[in-house]
Image 1: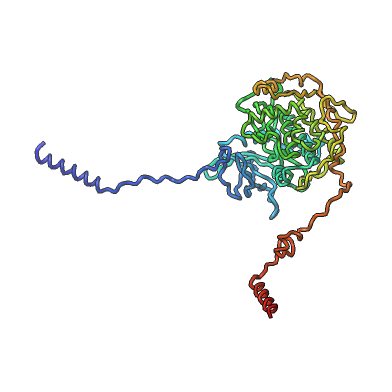
Image 2: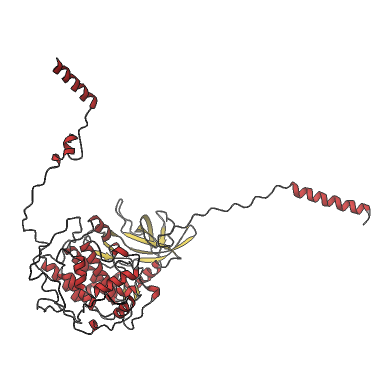
Length: 500
């Protein structure tokens, strides 16, 4: 390369470097801030808020209008809704609800397909006619589908709207329900369980939070069993524990079968028994350690093998209701594949109401009231019913009689105890069940008898309270404010008159 070529190439190289250096540095692209996906406490994604007035179309092209949000569950959100073709009157409460969850979640998918198979309105009406029922606490399936909003895809299901849940009322009532109310709720839930069991499903999560009162006029005393996110088919064949499904449900009420991952019909009846026991006594014996499911399972197995001990634990100062003991003992007697005798369970609870002089179809009466105390039992009836008590002709009888063996489990190895209990080969399944094991209970406690007069001690008036007197209280909630300046002047004037 000659000198001219060298200088020319150097010129272009230097000129290119100057041009590169003179350019402004490029700023990195700012990342768009994306809103964090809402999540429930259990880790499931929650849908972003759906705007009020949004129209969704179900699989039949029927249109529903989204109303305000009325609740957030563990898997999705619930909105009030209306049928676009039948707009509600102004200021009228929206009669339907739409449950929505992101497509990535699974529980609503399970619940939606359960409703599609089991809860169509004509299916429910046919069952009511067959069983001669005026009402059934089974939610109706009204529609379902998928909907896209703001670039996100959701699935939804449409149902009737319901009222307050029993758990909220239980807490408002200082964690206690009256026995008549408990028996009436139990009767309604047994009706629903018989229906879903006839469709080869179990619920597996019966609890106060999933029991809702009717919302429409005339349904205020009807209880509806909702939330079928854990509903599954049951098997009448081999008993196969599934560790992946172990302890499914709400730990306080999970049945012994569900603790080992086996869905059963007797498990649903057992869950109902735990609920009724808690409603009457405020607390279950294993609630002190709910973080340990194995401990809870062991406690349930111990007490279900010894119902009298369970009753002594839960009713330390009062006589346990005979009807509750009989129900527990019947549930404990069932094999995992047995067809529960729903008619016997219903007659049992109805007889309990009759013994209390209460009607079967009366008001639930879940309002806040002080619990009624039972009279002290006499020596003749002061014992826990056992399977050796003689039967009486007045009691109803289950079709498959079995006897409960109250065996001690204190010194057994936990693993062996649970395996033996769920093997289906215990001696309690091979012996006869004595349905009348609670006949010696005291029947003197008539909780609904309001004719009996009781003497009460006179209650001191609040006006006698020193604080009320010192504060110059005129009536409850108010007090007369004293002007201290005027009071001081009055005292000084009085003192001058005295000195003079």
